[in-house]
Length: 121
Image (cartoon, rainbow, N blue to C red):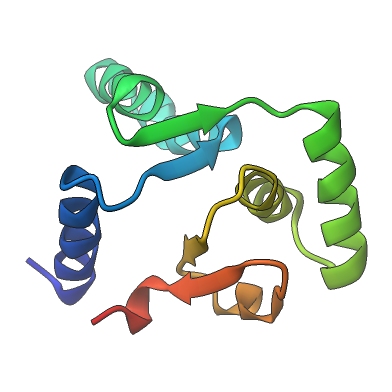
């Protein structure tokens, strides 16, 4: 198991122990399904749908007009990409404490504490 997987495993164990919930936007589902759909991996597609939409400790939120307006503000302020801004806006508006990412460019976001997976102990 590589270092990245070990770090994520720790985070998921905390989630399994009800120490926090994961929240994400429906954009996550859209993004993770692309590769398995291209590769014809229908079993993986169904697994991702089930996990991201129905798993305990993981809440998924649809994109609303309120989120869209927040996305526009984030994009205007930080010049971020739309998918990133959608995730960040969802986290902020649903009162998440942290935003986990691998993208160091998002560390400049000030409205929520951004944590790089690479920085986890």
